[in-house]
Length: 50
Image 1 (cartoon, one colour):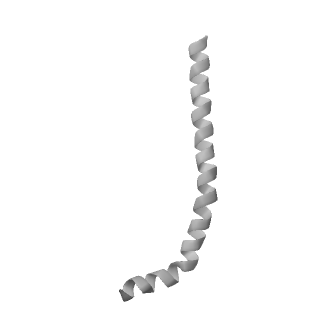
Image 2: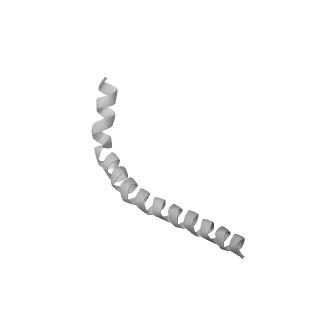
Image 3: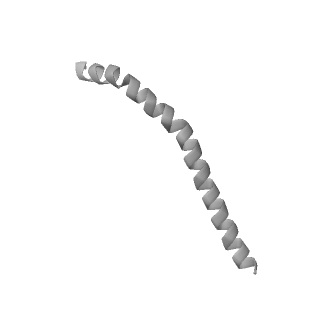
């Protein structure tokens, strides 16, 4: 009985952690991607000039 509960708990925690990481990752990744896209034109020439 306890083993099945433990397995279920482990699964639930791993799934919830994964969902949390994805949500937090989206919060941070989307603005970063937008920033990189907007500043790409400024970043690329400066790299080539050096």
